[in-house]
Image (tube, rainbow, N blue to C red; front, top):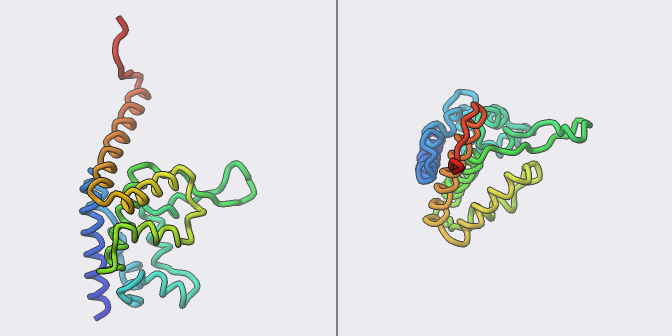
Length: 198
């Protein structure tokens, strides 16, 4: 009954990410996170390659040399850095680089990494687990420098200061981000925010 175990794992993961997102004020993203995992394309692969201690995508990749589930997933979920990889306009030689991710997706990516570390590390999980996994990862090089800086700041803060302080910071970070976006939107419409000069 690997499909049932896989379903329990993705439900558990979704719930954990949702809790993390809610702590950061990302309510919509917390609810919508990873819904594509329930599609047949992703779910069938996850059920087939389920192991319980790592992503089924890794097992499919080892067997086939690619993973159809991951290719489907990364193109539909903006909290993955791979969603934001595009052609480098500066080089114009066909090189691919990471684009700057919007801050709300960087924070969702952080929430996702923390939840995944808890689920796969189980009782071995510590506040350092997500940072350690990131530092050993293969895809860091494809990140835009801004995205890397912000994600590393959150992961390092979690490792050094714990969940309460890090999620409180992320919540304030998201408030400032939303305010900045609103001001930009109003300015585009010709509405200026600020004190009147006397």
